[in-house]
Image (cartoon, rainbow, N blue to C red; front, side, top):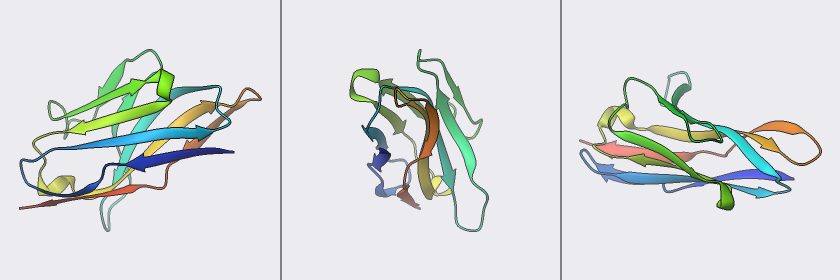
Length: 119
């Protein structure tokens, strides 16, 4: 059984920072590409940042220069450092990962972590 467990969300004032973690647990041989998505109330889920297993990254224009995605393959964990947060960043943040269980590849979602930025 594979699970992606997100943590690090919370309430922060505009201009503040948060660091989200997405930790893979269970029967994991390796984790490939990982994406962070977010979904604000009443809006569609949108891609925020992505990282390959080798460390190549991509960001949505709305978060470039403010957010940094990184990973620790030894810990099966991916991070999203969020700086200069704005009220528009308020959303539930989800990680989405390609996981090799040793028996095959699968894609998994985390349960989400709430980020609320107050003005």
